[in-house]
Image 1 (cartoon, rainbow, N blue to C red):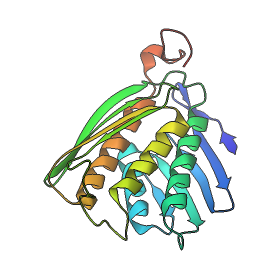
Image 2 (cartoon, helix red, strand yellow):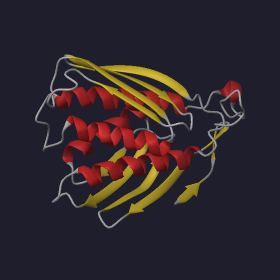
Image 3 (cartoon, one colour):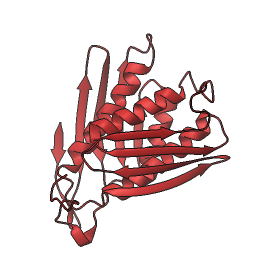
Length: 213
């Protein structure tokens, strides 16, 4: 991991890189700029996930350069999960002790007849909740390239657990998997953007009454 520190106004620039390699997958994040402009270069060999991470970066104003490969001849599970873990880790590394961040955010986004609400708390206490229409039944769609609702859940839960955040996802309305997840990843990007933003009123403080997360 490489960390780059500079100054953006009163806050440090939060830029880092990270590599996660196992016998099953290799995930390289050559750049994460938390204070970016939303530029993304994403190549995971899972086209649908590339699209979702690009939406997350664009609406969160995060610059991300990510490439990944793995044993997708088995299935997408290992690579999908490890990308979520790597992104969660790199965000955690970039934020450090989280001094000055807003910490908590809630955002919503529609996508045609579907809508998603995301709640985020960067608390260092991982928790994940996911609600969607038809839960307990079969997937609401066959998915894109075989990407199911459960792959999306696994990705988001892996991100949340590795970063150490509360992440609550609620999908409503009607739509197929593509519309559901477009709404989710757009709202997730916006919520993360707000949660990691420096609050000038407490720019030198860790955002907790305890003084530590």
